[in-house]
Length: 298
Image (tube, rainbow, N blue to C red; front, side, top):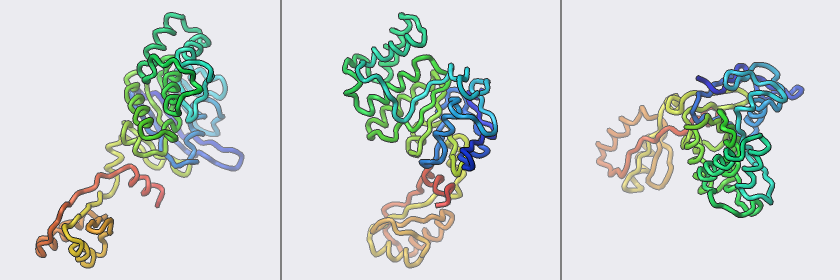
């Protein structure tokens, strides 16, 4: 079953059209990467899903229920982590989660058990310092705990790793991978390596439209061909290959890149005939960065 579906969604701000004919579906218990450049319209799409903006055209469904602008009932099954979560800085993590539970009407016993469970999950169990002294990474982890507190069926994360250092990014990505057993994750980002690390499916948003989407493995296969790296023992051998095959691109003193992988046999025959000493011939795995550059035409 699909937890989230967008069908021919468009959003205009006056004469400016930010989203046009956007359609994709997010299956249950997956981490779905919603990818696009800064300013591509990802945050606008998140706000539409949360019912914070009116839809110009199309329909959004969460758990089989249409999203409505304003006090939409679908938000009862949605948790949200913004790119910069805000907290009452004078509270400790456990105090803040208890406050969240109390305003949502949860029983005291459930608040205590859920708080302990989530603080353990995000690595903040036993943390007694005030939130005002937290690093950006610690605040993001607490934000995940807050977003998951009400057992949401859909967790929306808007650029959650964009300002984190490598260690903080890894911690947060590991948490999001773990929580897909409990919920469905919509992960908005422009950091393609994060998508490759944790996402099951993804969609590229470009120029207000979905340019490419599907399971991650299938999306990778859509690239025409993978490049091949050829590294020689001697610099002069690399120069000889470059002169013979002008389509080889220099990537180092002794390294060349063959973009047209189907032409590899002719390069190999030449290497064998001249008995050139080769250190490495390696087919490069297709990356989302390669695909994205193709999509945006750069």
